[in-house]
Length: 346
Image (cartoon, rainbow, N blue to C red):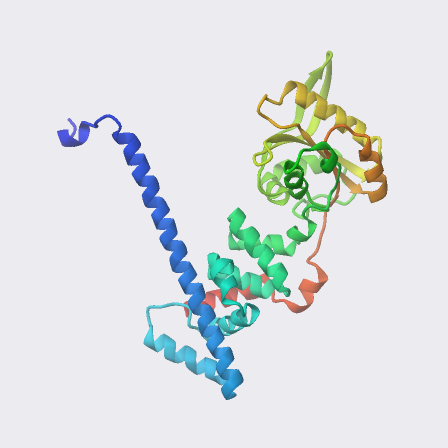
């Protein structure tokens, strides 16, 4: 026999929908409150850093004052984290990197302090930092994901594939489609040799589908590998098939473990037609093709795409890619950053 009071067992009509709406409002309010607290904390850190900069410049205070300040602030606020000497040094660098308070309030202030430390220590140019900050906000990147994208220069590669989208897709969809592809694609998470053939690479990509989707970018959903299509009684198999949630279209990906050749586009074009005829629904946009090859001559690829009726992009892939040299020489390692982040809890 149930111990639930009768008044709680009798649910009036419409109550469930109302409860769901209230839960949604509460979650939204909690998220807004957390964002507001984060913005205030980041702004406070910026103000402390600005004060340190100004007083050191105007009154000639040396670095020792930061150590004294860390001791005094932790004594005054024992329950508040973030007043270690290392973090105060980061506050100073943060204020130096962003002299305009408006940027702190409108852009980087929307990111947690840990994200801002990654931007500060990983990137040199303000334009780069701001671009990655905005991308992190738009895509909801965690700190680790932001680290990965900076290491692999995601934004620098974005939109660089050779495509015919401007001629084959209507605006503004063509711009979004172009920005959805990159060149080159970095498959440094695969345990295969540089001489691996298409099937080996394809199998490895599916085994590491999470990392592959991360490299492809936001919006890609995996549909299948070696997707079977029957055309006129003959069997055909698509290497990799995806659906792009923002573009609202299927994306056929073909792998070639060799240099780009114009004839590669014939097979891909056929697959796009087949997907449009047999798989695409009425509300889906035209299917897009992406040919990934080991290398390419950009001019040859541009010429080859001119007479293709379907929207297609051509990009290179790299199986092994080390950290860019300019990042290696002057920036701390991931482990060093982690240790400095942990020092906030001292």
